[in-house]
Amino acid sequence: MKYNRISSTLFEKNRKKFVQQMKPGSIAIFHSNDEVPRNGDAFYRFKQNSDLFYLSGVDQEDTVLVLFPDCPNPIYREMLFIKETSEQIAIWDGARLMPKEASEVSGIGQIFWYHEYKKTVHSAFLMAETIYLNLNENDRSVDTVPANQYRFAQEIKNRYPAHQISRSAPILANLRMVKEPEEIALLTEATSITRAGFERLLKFVKPGVWEYEVEAELIHEFTRRRSGGFAFDPIIASGSSACVLHYVENNKICNDGDLLLLDFGAEYANYNGDLTRCIPVNGRFTPRQKAVYNAVLKVHREAGKLIKPGKTIPEYHQEVCEVMTEELVGLGLLSMDEVKNNKRAFAKYFMHGTSHHLGLDVHDTMHRYGKMQVGNVLTIEPGIYIPEEGIGVRIENDVLVTENGLHDFMAGLPIEVAEIEDIMNA
Image (tube, rainbow, N blue to C red; front, side, top):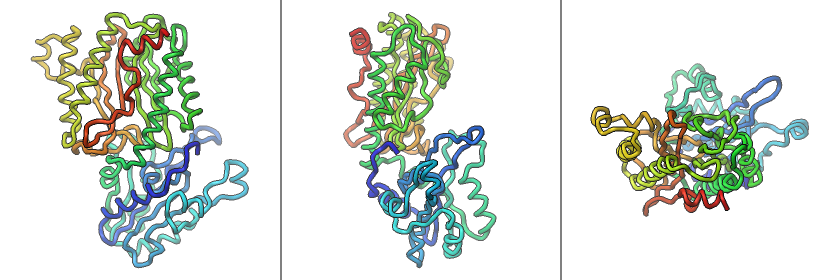
């Protein structure tokens, strides 16, 4: 991995919090993600299961974590199964963790080879009353491929039909929503790398460059700073492409007079940054572009004031939409009659949420109707999209909810019209 090793104390702390929420006499199993095939004999770059990483720090394939905190046999209370390395694997793909290294990374003493998993764990299952299964319960998920966790869940239900089954996901959502200091440090690094990418682009963008050239500048900056790459497929959208919310083709020329919407983030140690800025390709906003941009910036700032512990995201978003509606009326995009007749009139120009949780996943695990808490890391990203004018503006920062307000990971990054224009024209 490119990132510096993380202290095992983080993962020890995370496991302790999780097992405190388990029912007595229960066992929990966590699997690594599959290696996903591309074509031929190639695979996509491996991405670890976020929950497994959160609890162990192990960042490689063929890994299983077993937690059975009150097992009478101490061997089974914490077990980690890892891929057995070999000389051939070391030559072709690079050596995997040895047991001592896996123990140092995770803080777990009982390390076994992956192929020993079934025969070793069977007797532990027989001593347990309840089995915690770890499934992807992100309510945005539209997975159609039966991932490792689902295959394992079906196997467990078939092999141990008399056991009680419980869900790990609700527990982990509660835990992962509130970041530990070590996680905040990792998010600070991810957002710092993301910031550097944007600062590089302010000096690079000009009429005639291609969107994919802008993307190339970002990955260069990320990689040289030990990032694992993009946190998600970057959106480099010039002109009317900015009105396509998930535009990722990045294959058009950036024309004089257009705005360029940039939505991207760097990944560091599996933690993610997420930034959106909108800049004029030629370095100067037109009066109309400036008006739309400043309207979005006002909503962005007001949204930050509305984030409070104890408030739900739907409640908060509704308050933001009221501010947005006022700005849309001010821009002449909505009339007062339209607003009176349709409370969701704003959705014609602002059709997505204002904020999402951020962490090991870009759209991090959350309880959608749960209350915001100190320790949450959220994005703030209002936008206005006017296809008929070829203008799309979104402004996004990442913030930490603290006891004393918000800590903005992007504080000091150019955001005002004058700041952006001054740097682009220096």
